[in-house]
Image (tube, rainbow, N blue to C red; front, side):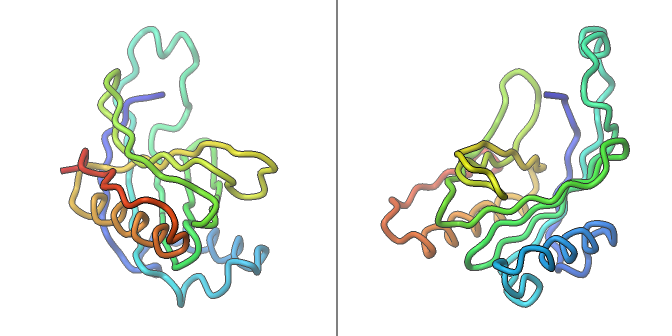
Length: 169
């Protein structure tokens, strides 16, 4: 995992970078089960991640080629959707039905990085997988994580309530 300097801001869906808006709209058109993504948004954020200078070992191992990443993320009452656009890797959109996933805080001790780990059935996966959404330390990231947790609890009321995102404070 590379070390990135991340900044997360809260925004409306329409305030995401235009390429992220287009990608999410196209994804939603191809995945009708998502419903009215734009109309159902509970919260939306965007993270800008700039890669820190790679050390000699990272350069030798052929680390992630993206020097800048933009991630747009939104939560609806039933879905968590995120789109990642790397300057070299392009755009990838992922979604997870809230009742089929768990989320937890991620904070690396090896590199200065924070975010949200999503585990469960993501996208069209046939088995449980793990995804990661990198976020900055801003209050918007904390608020988004809390909103996702609340939406999961509502979508799956039998799950125990846990405060998982204190790392961002």
